[in-house]
Length: 133
Image 1 (cartoon, helix red, strand yellow):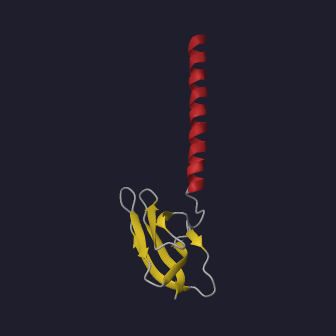
Image 2: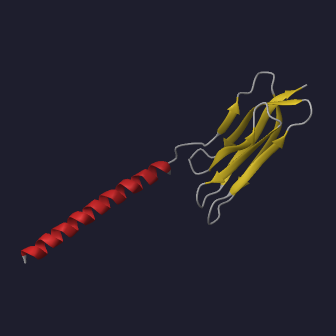
Image 3: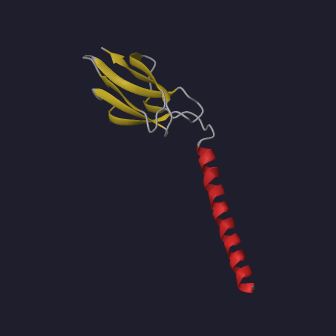
């Protein structure tokens, strides 16, 4: 009988440890999903003489996995890219993440990839600033 009691206590102890671990994991997940803000990407800083060379806005709905989009801009002759902004229009941490794939400031092009959160969509604005000669 004592062995069964000790076995039951050991099982209860293990269950409590598992529940505690699950609670900590769930707490971390809730922190990440609790509305920590926007996921903007900024390359460079627009200057006072800069103009918008290109602007695009994209809104994509959710699906069963990830939603992706690439913003691309190839500069025209006589232009200089000084800043790039991928602006997350959702401020509740549910949008996507922006990453530079290639190009950027003082390059002839820029490519930015947006990837949503799992089973989420996103709404981003892509702005390229620069100077025209």
